[in-house]
Length: 415
Image 1 (tube, rainbow, N blue to C red):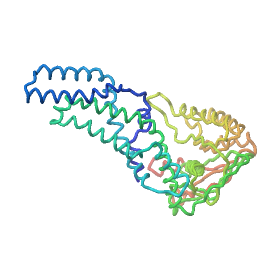
Image 2 (cartoon, helix red, strand yellow):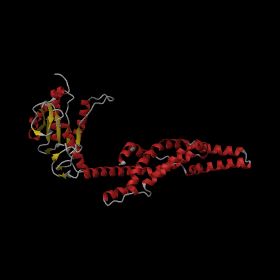
Image 3 (cartoon, rainbow, N blue to C red):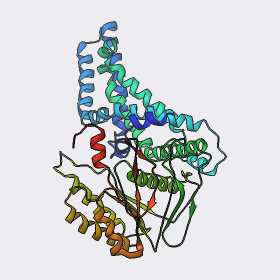
Image 4 (cartoon, one colour):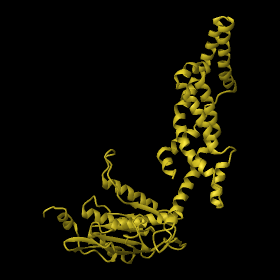
């Protein structure tokens, strides 16, 4: 339950960069003088006012202290500029770390993650508490009463010296802490999903040619009492499904269901199916691609860039499972047909498996180009008592009707 707070408030990239930044070392004599000179200044001040020591002695002590502060200032200010951010982020992270440190595990994986935290002496929780304490001490200089005395104590300088020492000693461990917490949260999420869905199947992995076989597949985020399940099958000799269908009939949901279940399977979680067999695959998806106003990038341009990345991914191993939703819908039908046929042929020839959805029935003729390597399936709707009904069942073949005009009429557009 602490995980969302970590995601919301911790900036792991910036935090690691802060921890691994080149050190700004203070020489031993600088550290000694930073503590000794304020003590001498206070002692001299007490002696001047109590025993009549010349004021010039106090002026000399203050001057020496000021010179040291000016010498160290170029290193002190950058340290103080980032400590508030680091201490805040680490304090949130410490909530999870302390929870983790309090547990005792039987699992070898969890034991190894916990060992990562214990390496290096003091626990992360203890070390982060020390940094938080230093941050609080630094903030005390903002107190109006103490603020008068803080410059005489070289308070900011001494805090910066202590904070930099903490960063040099513990900063290199930040990537390891973040990695352990990230893995722990992922394992907790997968374990919770498995616990809440005991009927979901565990995937079976196939070591041979590329394969995806899912029986009674469904999207994990759709409630069980309303979900509609479908069978899907892709294999090396029939690697492509062309999914046609009317609006809102379930084409895009099918692609998302396949993608998220494959991701769950590869992460070690159960899947929303009664049987799920797959070979090692990598996901390449072009779903809900949008334009970019700031970059002056159209939807079509963003889509072809995404598809280019999928094609490059398909050159390597393991094979790619591609999910292309409404391919090239941002261009004219002639270019869409030629471009889509070329892309799909290239992906299939590179050993990829995948799905492509479309409203354009011309694209269903890819089956004529690729022969038995492609298969047409579709979703459809029915008009019942003047209202549109969807059963979300995947059927063989090409869809024979469209519902765009009916949808327009259903919301009051006169045609």
